[in-house]
Image (cartoon, rainbow, N blue to C red; front, top):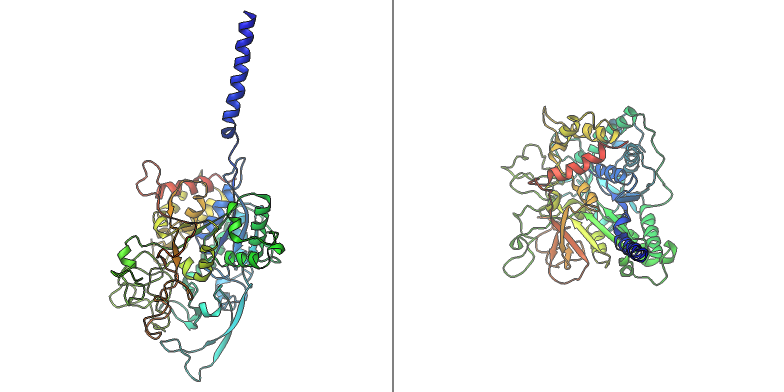
Amino acid sequence: MVRSTFKALLAGLILTGVASLVCLPSAIAAKPVRVILDHDGGFEDYYSVLVLALASQGEAPPVKLIGVTTAPNGESYCNGSNGYPDRKQALLGSFSAEEGTIDGITQKILSIAQYDRAKIYTGCDERTAVISVPNEADEFGKPVPGTGKTPVKVQLPVGGKAALGPCLFHKEFVFSERDIVCWNEFNRPFRDETLKYVLPNAQKALTTFNLPELNLIRSRKKASDFIAESICKAYTDQNPLTILSVGPVTNLARAYTKIERKPKEYGCPRKIKLSDLSKVISTRFMGGAWDTNKADNFDANGNYRLNEPFPTWTAGNIYFQAGEHIFGMHHLPFPGTNFQDIQTGEHKKAFNSLNNAEFNFWIDAIALAKVLNSKIPVTIVPLNATDSARLQGFGDRLRNNPSQCATAPAQFIQNLQFANSPAPGVFVFDTLFLWDTLAATSLWNNFVNFEDFRDLEVTTLTNGDPNTVTGQLSAKELFRRDIGSLFRLGRVNNPVKVGLTTNPSPGDPDFKTTIQNTVFNLVCTAK
């Protein structure tokens, strides 16, 4: 009896021990995804900043935001360049020029989440130039003799001045002011939304909830330096790190170049190659657009089609065609469209952008080519996926749940969703998408179906199919019109995955509720 009891006890102990060993991995919480967020300051970029900061808190966070880097060439402004703040004083009001920059607004957003574990590193002023902008120019963007020029400091993409210009005093819409605008930048009426709507509503949330603004900006270290150092430290410590870029990848491309040129300066081994980093470093981008109809990209002879005068596909947002498509670039106001009466047509030959690129990849395509060919894993969340991540009705949902959503993050988003209202009952932000927030939340949710695109290329000023770069059409007829478009000709072998579709929760027909539930649960339960 004793022996049998002892044997039973021993067997039980052995089984318990084995079971504990078998169950050990599930008993330990998965390590959070360590991430650096690189963004360019559009209104919804700040939602992704907020969501990542909130998700990084708590007892077992799925993600750990370790730093935020800001792009020099996107939707927000760097101080003292591209006409800011001199031409934006009326929009700034009582705010300082520093508060209105991409870094200043980012600091307010992290303060709304009261998250101080991620510091802010600026991409501003790493590479700039002073250019002479003609005070008057013809339809081709050529200076009108005798009208003079104005010197303007600008932030440069990786491609430099050749990839930025022309820069002109340009009036995009009949209701907008004439402003300095360059080819490779967001147009000013849309870019100014950060000053008109994001900045005051961020401050309102801080004031209403009596939250202190945190001191997070680290101006002595550039964004690319921080990224390079973080990559090398992750490699040395064998501690995985993801760089999430939801704007142009300028900062990341510059970081890669720095590691290649001076690896030891940033903490990497002297003879390291970028491909060696692939064991611990991964990247995820919100950007690009993929036309799933191959015939739209290649003709019957297999030639890439982007130089056709009037392409008809609709995958991207950097183009204008006879239809409903306009997205903040310098488009030709074709007769017969809904926008013919609100665009001026000024400099229409200089700013003729007719292709199916997407803004983030278009604005610094040479930087994208660099990171695509780095041999470091890339996953891309393109417009194909984000088109199902709709913001429609989200402001109403927050407003209709006052007891749950009486938090600073929820009130910030709610107020911002209703801020941009050009007509009674019309709310522009409510018609848009959780572009960057989808890319962010896909880091710890199975939201996007990724598939191999191991031969992905992008058209730039210097690479891609040689028949597509300006090429067949006169520069006077069409200017630099196929930059930033994705294509595949089987000439490269990159570790790239692209997510074309999303995974809605059961009962959600179109994914909108799925993504909104995730954001709702984060912003409405924040302390």
